[in-house]
Length: 476
Image 1 (tube, rainbow, N blue to C red):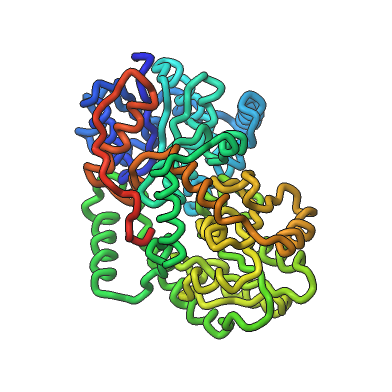
Image 2: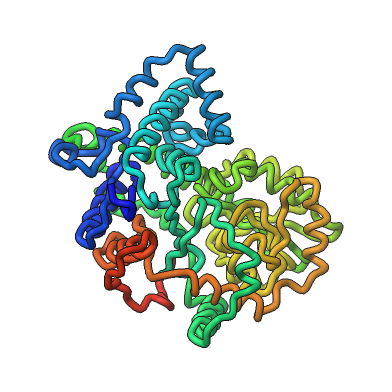
């Protein structure tokens, strides 16, 4: 393929359709593309045939060969790949939903991993693309493709859509960490500073919100949707139907309703004592599974933070509004009884009501951590994020450091507004218009992505479909 070609990677039916739209948009601009997707079952017959730019991983000979490996051969092959890539493959496949949701055993995941790796390596070696793009996610095919890029000399065109609403920011790796030296040299233009001031004011005034409580009510529309999914999973069987686990999702919904009701007796108001705030992350989210996998057990992290607080401080925690009850009422109740300094807040309480009153924020890498900087709060981070490592936060790299870092954060005055504004302007400078494709599949958003990727590989200067999205007023 051309030295300006781009390889796109997708997983699951919905994402396949979105990425196919992106591939066609790039092709219209003259950009040579190839689309790698994971499963044949996510495609219809017409989509799977007669499209030379499309590669289906589980149809590749290397994938089928890996499925035949014996147990002893499997262990040796995994060890060879781990040494070659310098990463723990079991850690990678544990972030894939087939492992944590569908409970595939390790031996099966190891075969899938080896087959996917061998297929990706051959396809990328044949294509020799200038860049590879896939949307954020813990899916195996994407994480393995990202890991192969530096070994094959392929540029990773990773785009991140947080924390600037309506903007996408390129990163060279999925840990989305910014360069402190680059930020120190940056001088914002008047327009970039004006944008940053507007965003900061918008967050402080709650005009921009990143998360809203999940509507758990049993509405007629929800019943209709479940009925439609049951018919698809058992009767019509469209492409992607193998991933429709209606019973599991129904049980999850009902358990979340029940858990929320059980936990409500533990909810307490903010109170008058000084406190540190910890916003609970979505379980199995890529933010944790990929960028901070050592803290996947958030109950353990909460207890670790609570035990690290100076005398006289409480720890206020609030479940993610999209996943109330995910920590489990029994386990969380046990922790609350054991740790009286931990205060569970009502998840419907807006983070903007908590931030002005807390003494500091502890977070893995949530958007609340970014908001805490805007509110001028000392912020302690435990995972990779776009705001970590820039002198704005207190960053935990060793659990033994947590007590001293929290104490130092509490003694500090928090980040200066000028530094936060400059950081936001820096992100604005590096970004272009766009929302995550999973959130916005509109033609305009796809065209924005295509325009950005075409510019990134060079040789193409297409007109962008950019719209003025610098100050959206929708909730994320």
